[in-house]
Length: 459
Image (tube, rainbow, N blue to C red):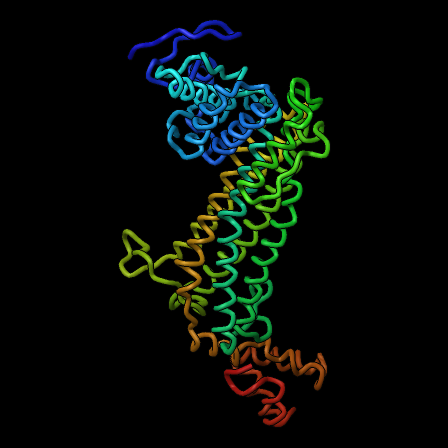
């Protein structure tokens, strides 16, 4: 492969001639590739959106030649469109400001803009990656801004719609199972009767609250650090630059992004990202509870609870014919565990706001965006491949209601706790039902028992 030499403030490096990236990107690839992980394309496209609109605003201010700006705008748009996805090669684990990724984008855009203008790929003339593509910007304000743009965009486009779909699926099952009597359980022990529909209504409300929590963080994620440049003072940028660029991004995305109220906070801290991750963790915990409940409720089919039947998606065992496992709930459980782990990393990353700059921005970006995307995918799968296909085992549900010892609880206000406890003890020792013992002892009439306990098999 032919190479050319490019120089920057760090010296000279050989760059493959058929690549658009330049010296700083190549140096990062050569020296810092430790994981094979690269930042998500949604994050790259957020940076490219900043570059595209910056080129237009800088042209309007007279800070960028009208001859250069169209090529930069076109090149940035091509990055947004995914034309050069394979060119974004910098490892997640890089300099903590994300400078390597910012320069990767600058150099791809400059390289493509030069090709548009001259026919020659790459290089620094006539379009320079720093002087022109990065004009009025710093990695220190671009990368935090891109985190917010990509995260809030992904939440709105992917995660919220998937959660809303899951709510609808759970609510539909709540209505469908409204008349299915079953036994409730506390401490994994029999409790009082309820309906399967009531149980599913609780799941639906958990997800609804997750949606509400997600929406409450939007105003903080909508604040962008752009305009602060190196430390928050705005050095080397036009006073109106950030406001105008952000207004254009808000118009393009339909999301009300605004300039940060305080640039020193916006660059030194990543509290909004930490808060967002905390909400994602809460949603993951909710999903973990629901998925585990479904595993237990479907357990069996003959030697356990078996109150619901999950869709049969694939053979569940390589050795036991006929065995069917709760595949989708277990997918959800693993995704939830990953999101909880990501939150721990983001929490640690959020503590790395040393003086005027957080220095774990790529870590925060990668984990936050991964959490959003895998949650969105898992939630959609959960709704479509699991919840929508659940059926109730009505016979099994009914069989437990009349035989549970906990059925004595509604009698307590009428016969007192001690008498009820004695009936419960006899039921446990003899295997007889609460209804049968109460009738035999003539403690209450059959009519009274039906009023308190419901007709047999019903609530």
